[in-house]
Length: 129
Image (cartoon, rainbow, N blue to C red):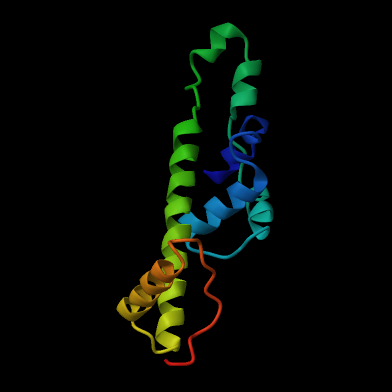
């Protein structure tokens, strides 16, 4: 029911950019901004703003909707996905250059030792490879 995430109460916890990233991640798509139109086509649900507007006697019949734990969980999942995607891209790059991960790691260690563990920026392949 992604339409419930369009409620105004979600703006702070789940801005539009995060909402779209989350929907793309959980659905394994790259729809991007097209999600907004898709959500607009769905029937609307009783969001938290509507629930708060009900008289007190009726509020007890409507289950409270706390999306915060789900939003926090989705943020952690997307963060892990970003890290894993970066790792995959790195290994794909090494494979394209025909460099083993072990060789690369050893070269980085050697450069760090030569530079007293100062931060280094690796931007090209050494000529000896």
